[in-house]
Length: 302
Picture (cartoon, rainbow, N blue to C red):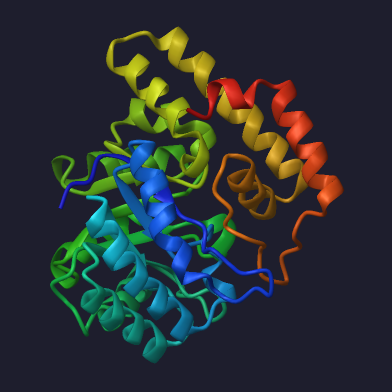
């Protein structure tokens, strides 16, 4: 499997009481299709997976299996969990829902010590569906797990034959270069840092997984188009808009802010689940004014 283009790290729609709003998934899939987003990464960080029950995540896979197929989207199901039986149940659910691939971050409490231990974990995790394409979700700022990802690729060539690549949300640029060049570029490296999307393109990443692709896909399409035609100044100018937007989100609280932006962009995904804190109406009004001041609704939303 070799994925390319924009893959949205989708939000999990919630009702006002913070129960999962599965009925909103088809609308979200259609919205992304209209934005020319070619794939979805379901139940990751943006999807608040660590705040959902295993049963909720399994039902979410079922909803996305239908919606993604209806909209011609590649569906990657995040199955990472601190409990091996729960992770394996998620793998089975992803397989049964028709997911095109699975992905998992490292365990976040009892952490693997090195690349070999992580590979051992993923061999067990993927055992219920060993033939499904698998992407290691490398996100040390959130997982707290820092390993040599290029060493992991070497080990996985023999021990994890279904490994397709890496969802690379790791700030280590030298390690990124090693992963992209590993074994003649055999691994599908999907870049996962939206504010540096252009850097991922320049390093040879054919695709990217991002949370801001949910509402600002036109911006990233322009970055990609400018990069492909060699207009680097134009690409950098557009990327600067992304960086300023994301910096503003982080100054508030990133995921609650990004989810509120979805509503402002025309698709209500509801609140965030505690312990995340939903933005108040006054905070949303301030957010809207700040977005308008930076021209967001002109250059990010079709």
